[in-house]
Amino acid sequence: MKVSEIMTSRIEYISGDSSVFEAIEKMIEKRIRSLVVKFRGENESHGVITARDIVCKVIARKKNLREVKVADIASRPLVSIEQEAELSEVAGLMEESGVGRVFVREGDGIVGVVALLDIMAGTLIMRARGKNVV
Image (cartoon, rainbow, N blue to C red; front, side):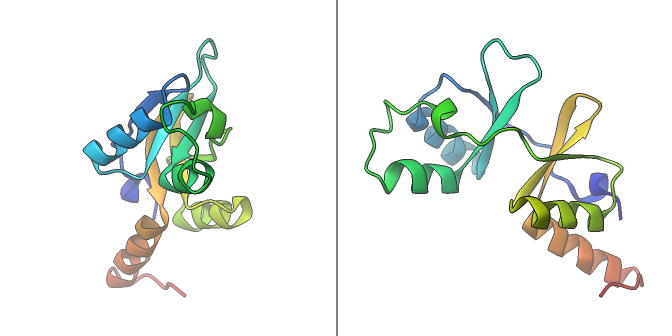
């Protein structure tokens, strides 16, 4: 199964200059767990900020949500894979990188994201299709 078959194509972006408070608002409004971070003046450089980053790096440490910038806690570079990669490749990349989501690229652009639950769903779909899945 190709990554493009299971990826979520709805990607939300935020500027690295935005506050963590703004990131929380956007994530809650859109009901998502991560945002792709764009860094000012860096055309091809992206990062990611996740709900886990916000909770562990800001809220748990009792930092001011309006003062901490997204760029201060974002992970970079993004862990990404081409959309024609196989499901097993993205699962291996997640394990190797220690991440719960991998962004999907087409050329230089980000076109989707695959999370742990997507891989589990893809595995069930493959089994339902009669594919030999461990």
